Image (cartoon, rainbow, N blue to C red; front, side):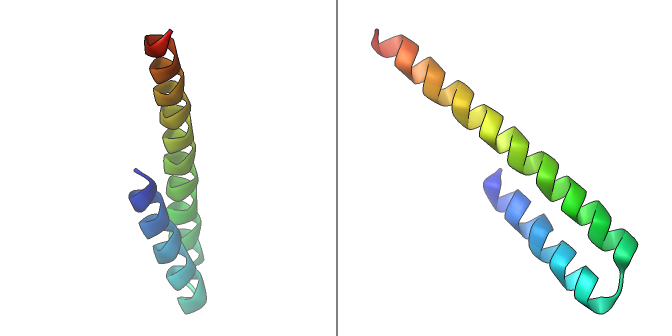
Length: 54
């Protein structure tokens, strides 16, 4: 999931450099959403692992 967020972020940077503002904004938005989904899943995974140990 984090890989996809980084890929969309890189595409957004390239699109911004080339002058495609709309595409860059969309890709940055997708990258931001994927990053936060990754963070939430990471926290859930860590919490479920901690609960199983107890």
